[in-house]
Length: 66
Image (cartoon, rainbow, N blue to C red):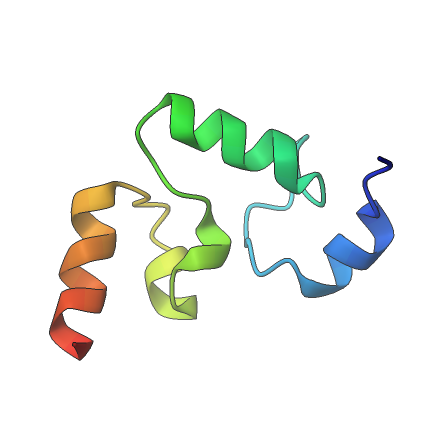
């Protein structure tokens, strides 16, 4: 299966433009998960810009909305 990088880039909300995994969702998820993090695309825009990608932070954000 080929990764549709150009399509992914159109939808990618990660603000870290120098990332070598940008648009390569499989690599991005694998990388962040190995560090017990989530990729930036799962966070709201303002939270994503903090580069704070921990599971705890994710749950804090979305726990408030539940």
